[in-house]
Amino acid sequence: MPAPLSATCKSIARQHPRWASFLILIPSLLLSGCPDPTKKYTLDPRDLVSNGLGEQSARTAAPFGDDMVRYLMGQTREAGDTFVLDVDFEPGGFAPRMDTLGDVEALLVIMRDFPKLKIVVEGHTDNAGDPKKNRKLSQWRANWVRQFLLERGIDEERVEAAGLGDSDPVADNDTQRGREQNRRLVVRVIDFEGKPINVWMDGPKK
Image 1: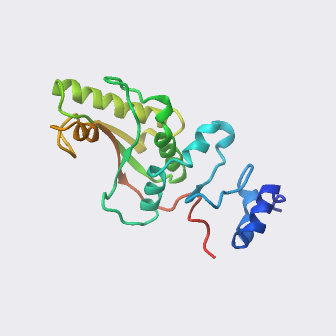
Image 2: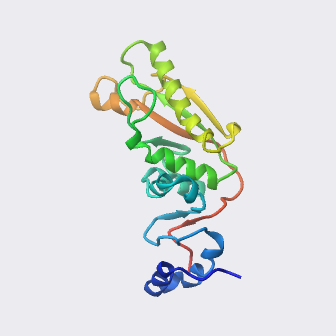
């Protein structure tokens, strides 16, 4: 028998009648709370208890999380199967600044909720400095993201890491803006089949 609706869910049901029938099912699926209808998508938050605020921030990461989920749900996009992680690094550093991990946390949530998804994390640099060092640095950065996912329960066979150095620029390395664009971490979908565990786009259909 489904658990009773929380006060918050009841309030949302009153304000958004089209959610009422959906909200009745929520308490039996989730440990606590209910979906926020203002979010573009809702991922099953059962891991909130064990992972704290990181999971919550992951669900609001944009546009990475929303863009990737929409692609996996069948929406075509110009950039195809590649998604840029918006993370910042100290110059020459291989670990992202901790206050810029929103996209990485969103990737973790997506990997959990799309259990058949396999990806490769690609590290890229600009062409400044020694090419061999650039390739090594890009590999370290890609490895960091992979390890972040593995330490949080993602199977190692689902995540690859590749350091490509300056071999695949997307902008002009002769300009500062171009170099900034070329220094990037990219998530590439390499295999995806099956349905997600529990994902709704723009709320449930009427």
